[in-house]
Amino acid sequence: MAITADDGIERDGGATLPLGTRSHGIYGWLSGRGYGRRLGVLLLLAILSFLTLYPLSMLLFGSLHSTPPGMAGEFNLDGYRQILTAENMMVLLNTIGISFAKTIPSISLAVLLAWICARTDTPGRGVLEVLITLPFFIPPILTAMAWGMLGNKQVGVINMAWQWLTGSTTSPINVYSYGGIVWHMMQYSTPFLFLFIVDAFRAMDPALEESSRMSGASRLRTFRYVTFMLMLPAIVSSFMLSLIRGIESFESPLFFGLPAGITVITTEIYNAINHRATPAYQYATAISFAIMALMFLLVIWQWYLLRGRSYATVTGKGYSPNITRLGPWRWVTFSFCILFFIVTVVLPVGQLAVGSFFQFFGFYSWDMLTLDHYRAVLQNKDFWRALSNTMLLGLMGATATMVLGGIVAYVSVRTTWRGRRLIDALAWLPWMMPGMVLGVGFLWAFAMLPGPFPIYGTIWALLIAYMALGTPIAVRVMSTAYHQLSFDLEECSRVHGASWWQTLWRILIALAWPSFAVGWVLTFFGIMRELSASILLYSVGSEVLSVVLLKLWANGQAEQVSVIGLFMMLLVIFFRWVQLKIIGKRISTL
Image 1 (cartoon, one colour):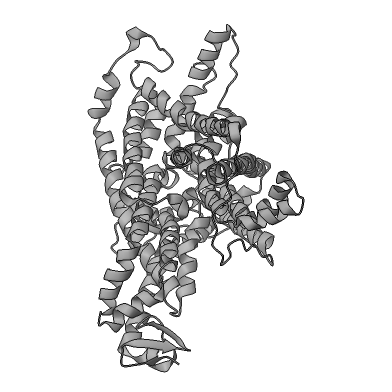
Image 2: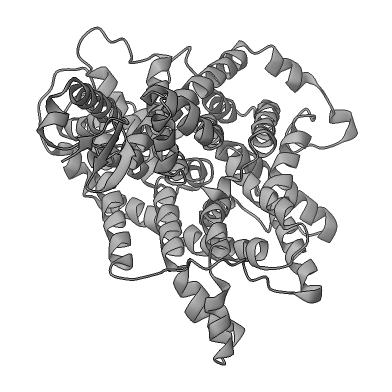
């Protein structure tokens, strides 16, 4: 039972905690303070349930409802019956096969790059780490469009350069294929995995590897049986995250799969709603609900792989990472990292820059140079409206999401309140919901929302969807920050007479604001690059930049796409600079 002493600190079971942090028993639940706390927990549960459980329940409702959202109909299993076809089995195999095909080389490449940056004497490792992670922040729709210009079989720049250099008439690259899908997905999957793996190398006690070497094991054997095995949790977690992100990928299959007749689950959902004479909402929703079950099975598989094993790598003894001296080979590893940056950033961004100055894509001569595309974009009202919407949603969405994530993380990490585990679980639920699936869920949710809530078809529908998608990242960032702060800091503040609010503002928020800022930048990038949910929830007047880009590309205006892509790259570079210079904290520490 908690006992409150005169110094304003609750002592529970011998542990000293800040007042209002830990409270058990009848008194805590019946007092005014306890009642306010319970009300706050219920309010937080209601908000998270609206962002997660409500669209998920509407997915189930929509998969059983025979008519589009908002129309009267009957309940049946026709949507699930339509799933059970040979064509959909091929769609499922395509989805899983492509995800595996990009995950295995991506994680291998990420491990190699992380080892180079964390455990070798390669020159400029800090700069290389920034360059390697940059593709993660570039919206996939931009690089997809750029590679559509670079790797087009007929007029792609790479193929034209090859033919000019060799005199051949063949085209060595065709991005509109299985290989093109996997190649593009790898370009933003590898930096994503790198962010998770690089710190696992840094945190490993080198004494474990040194013991193996002193016992006669070779470097390769040590890496295989010591380094790799101790990193297995990070690698398995990264593998599963990459696999899930591969299954939910939309941009790569949309740009490079559909023209080649290759369909995956996300593009099948998109086609069922947008590219049929009569939108098949029940069928699309049934597929969305089925993919949620697949995601859940993947999480269960991850738990099974790691169960009952110990992977302790950090001891109480101080140490620094073991640096491998590569000698002359350090310039090879340096060149390899630079090559990765050139292929994933310089080539696609360079194509956008070049394409924006020529009159027609694929015709590059001096007499074709023009600034007409810049004038067209600057005079395009849809572009300015989309830019305004994107910035508004980014600023509001990132701020609201981080505030919500900070509150959830505080309740989960700094308290023992009843319901905190449920709150944490609800906050993480969207991590298993692809943007396309969440978009379908909110499509039904907003259409069926009772009462005077005009959300459907407005910009607020996008804001709510972005908050749901960004909450897991916000909670992860703020949970890490709160875990690093000792309870003694709060105790000291309360002992010296500060109120709970003063302690929260002057201690916790003051110390955790760099992590809040990092999470804000990450969330803003997530909103700016989001396409799958946006394409389902936008309406006339609420378009964002990614939607406008997709429309221009579909209309064959690749040159204007290049111009807008460069504007978006300026935003990426600016906010990345803010994260690195102003905040002064590495994203990889998250």
